Image (cartoon, rainbow, N blue to C red; front, top):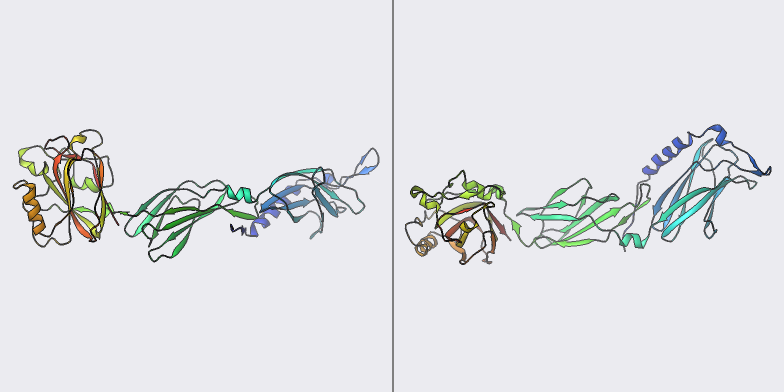
Length: 403
């Protein structure tokens, strides 16, 4: 069963002040009007203002009573009198006042007539009061505020939220932490991004929004929960990834490129190998080495091609290696030996081959890194040959995930 929560009563104090300000606008002549119709019928002052606050299958009415001292009661009824509710007017002060009452009704649209009366049966002219009663059908139609994306990192996850609907009061995010406990966080309507920590990869997520069907609602309605899960892997924080520039590694390249651009989070700038004899270490085959900034169990790798041209220069054959200790010394220069010989030397220096791919024909690609049960802080990408067969290399961005 959905939970329905009461609004704070202070809102209605402001409502009463608003009602009195409206009533003050009525002249004394209107307030105490007594006149006859066909010389016989006496009418008393009608209700100045009627405000309605919806709840779950109920309505609360606030009726602003003018200063006519003869008004002692009132009646609210439909035109066919299938619904009729009588109420007493008990003033708490002299002059203008407000009375309120609740009425339970089935969900639907209604049009009432409201009449004020004196002790001898004289009544005011009819004030038409349209109203909407909300219930189960309305509640079941409510949709929680949407999540645009969830960016998972090693120690936190960032939620990007869609815009809140106009009648959303607030949204509650419930998520599973690393200990399997469910945590609750309120998401204000103005919040577009929210970071949570201590979350569980693949853990449960639930989102529920609270709706107020109108400005004066006396209860709020919970939406149906939206169920999601966290990603099974997290994005390594690029802000802490740095190039190692080990002996024999590719350099910053040419044509205005830079080694650091490969992990700057943007695919708008490229890295491009040099094409002169003095910079052959930049051309295929080449090696690039990175400090991930943290020890991670790597699960996936992505390379983004240069956006404006030359996708054939992305690697067709490549390897990924990991290590945790650089103390065993530099590896041999890959340009002076075969790729196989370089691999033997790298393994002897403590590097572990994680991925070995050949035959790639996609300039932008992702590859899963098989589970190996080991975390690594240092990573090497070895480009063996290009898609087009040339020696030049260029691409825009490298991205790593862990689990």
